[in-house]
Length: 364
Ligand code: NAP
Ligand code: F7E
Image (cartoon, rainbow, N blue to C red; front, side, top):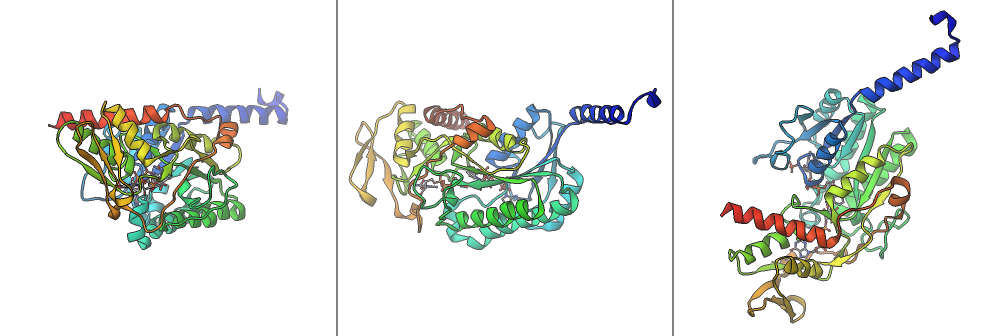
């Protein structure tokens, strides 16, 4: 029958068959940082979209798969050993996974620690992306790459911050991410035509958040105080403001950014900011407790209904340079990606407080 079809018909049929094959073929995603907060939510989300998920996992002295207990036994999840500090291991992971999409979430992500370990921060956050991009160009140049950029890049720029706001980072972490964005995201997109884009994400939290980040520290400490296991805890700057969303909402935006026709950077945020003090107060309400603030500066304390000091301020948690106020403008994400957050600040705080309370109570 083929001889009765015109060339145009044949081409049309071929394209249709190819696209049917593509639709049947499972997409493959490689996630660096799969063991982290975002990596675990993203892996779960991509599995719901029927992806085959590959994760780059580095060797650690403790079990690196703590957050992946729900999905690690899934046959659609493949974990490969590797490290962003080691080009050969990245190359092997790419050759094995042959990904359609790459999500670069691996990082030294602690801003406070970045002042103490700037070299390691740059080594992973900046050179790590460089190594990855170099290997992508050789092994899978058609793969689409998502880079985990951050609101910390805006630094001292006044809120609200959006895609056109200037980057004025103040921490080695912020600087490493700005440089990675400029050299490898914008640079390789413009000079080499790579499909690569940055999600400039504002703070996002969850019960899986690392325990040293302020939100998780607050929810764990107040859960312990509520359970009578701890008397008080210390914080640093209570007046810093952040735009806090839920990590589970933010990974949907990462995926959507790679489904666009052209790669474009996008701010992902809720558009609402709260201070660290307000995060404490909302968690206090979640635990049905009361707090009154007394004093100022390092002498400030939070006192409960019985007059016990439950929160103090300790200079050691101050940073050499602070980003005082971050609030994102998510208008572009809404328009271009059709993305909006589902979980409110109050719901997020309650989700974290409940999870920590139940986990600690269960462990007693
Ligand atoms: P996270 O929980 O700290 O996870 C970081 C991940 O990077 C972990 O899986 C860690 O592995 C991995 N990693 C660190 N060094 C590595 C190396 N040398 N080679 C390979 N993997 C390495 O961070 P997150 O909160 O999920 O954030 C994900 C990404 O988004 C990061 O790039 C972060 O900078 C960025 N970001 C986060 C936020 C936020 O609010 N969460 C906002 C904006 C941007 P181990 O488990 O072995 O430590
Ligand atoms: O600090 C203040 C602190 O460490 C938030 C990372 O995911 O989000 C995160 O970075 C604020 C800061 O997050 C304590 O000074 C007060 O102003 O929870 P954090 P971060 O620095 O905003 C960005 C977007 C990322 O990209 C990063 O990877 O809270 N603060 N007292 C404290 N912070 C901590 N950690 N501990 C305190 O005791």
